[in-house]
Structures are given as C-alpha cells and as structure tokens.
Length: 267
Ligand code: SF4
Image (tube, rainbow, N blue to C red; front, side, top):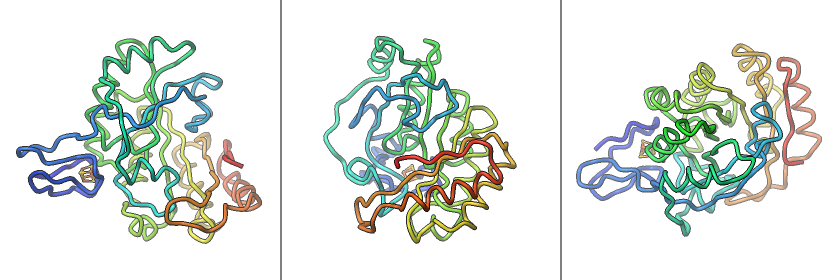
C-alpha cells in the first residue's frame, strides 16, 4: 500500500508504519493511526504560532498529536514528533465543542507536531469548524504533496510554513524535500493567509546568502509576506549553544532588504 500524503510516498507493508510513524497499513488500507490522539493542547495567543498578521491579539485553541515526516536532529518538539507519548482521544465533535466553549477563541490551530500527516483528522475537524464559522490554522513543515494540499486548502484559513533552509541538501539530510516545501508555500498562499518561519541554527542555515535567497523568493509571492526568524535552542540530538541574538538581528536586516514584515522570535 502506498501513502501519497507527502514526498516520501511510503510503500507500507501490512501492519507497518510509514516514515512518519503516524500512518499505517491496516488490512490493506493506509489509515491515519494518530487520528484524534492528542498529546498537547493549549489556548495560545495567535502570535505564538507564529501568526502575526492573522487576527492579531486573539487566542486560538492549539492541538498536536505525534509523529513527523522529517527527522530533524535539532527538533524543538522531539518528545512528540519523534516519539509516541501518552495521548488522550478527542473526537472532531469534542474538539469543536471545546473551541466553541473557549472564550475569545477564534478557532483551532493544528500544530506542535506535523499536522498534515494526520490529514483525515485535520480535514474532519476543519469541516466542522468552518460550519461553526471558526478559523482553521496549520503550522507545518510544508512536506505535503500538491494533490493533498489542494484538497485541504479550501478548509484552511491560515498557515505558518517552515522554509528550514535555502538548501536542498539540508532538507535531504533531515528527511525532507526542499522543492516540496517551496511548492507548499506557493500553493497555500493562493487560498489562505501564509506566514513563513526559518529556525536559525548556527553553522547550518545562518548565512546571509541563504536568508537573502529565501527573502528574495518570498518577495516574489508578496513583499508583505510575514517572515519569522526564530532562535534555536539545544534540543534532541543537537547540543550546540543557542543561536546568538546578534545573528538573528543581522539576518533580519538581510531579509528586510526584500520583505516588509520580518520578525525575530524566541529571543
Ligand atoms: S505521510 Fe507518513 S506514511 Fe504518508 S508518505 Fe509521508 S511519511 Fe510516508
């Protein structure tokens, strides 16, 4: 059985999981094994996603499950992305009830782990949220095939998508595909609000050249595209010290040559 959600296009043997650890071949069908299995839930300020230009000042119910279709050694959320922690089942109907009953909440953000590998859960919840006139946001690594993204796109109001590096080899080393990430940003921007994030890791993706190229490309979509440079902290398999604040501010100045809305996060 083949899963066609992301560029891994896993051929999954019976009773086995795909690369992401969240989708499985069960009885000859690929199922979303993490459907409704929520490992993290919080009411967050929308700016924490980060989404700075989408209902600023509001709050959004934020949920995550487990699994990821990349294997970044520097993952800042590895406890849920690379492991299968304890979870609580929350059905789409229950999640919508929670969203409706949370005061000042504008909707649901699917975040913390990669939401698109839980495609069926996101789609089921998003349909109900739209019916209730609530917003749907996704925080994604952009590793989703165009066909799957196009099916999901009408249900999504806002995305924050990573461009992890302007470097195809960086993506390959960490289990992803650079072209797919860029294509996801382009497609998502056709139907929804999009902001983009790069986690700046010392010695990995912190050259002026890479940030200039990323910003130049984003400017071809719109000079208004919000671009977030966020600070790496040692996590998971990486023990290098946190990104120096000076590096982040220097790179922000580089990006501002091309973009109007550049932000530095986690400093
Ligand atoms: S979503 Fe998971 S199972 Fe499907 S192709 Fe991607 S890594 Fe493989």
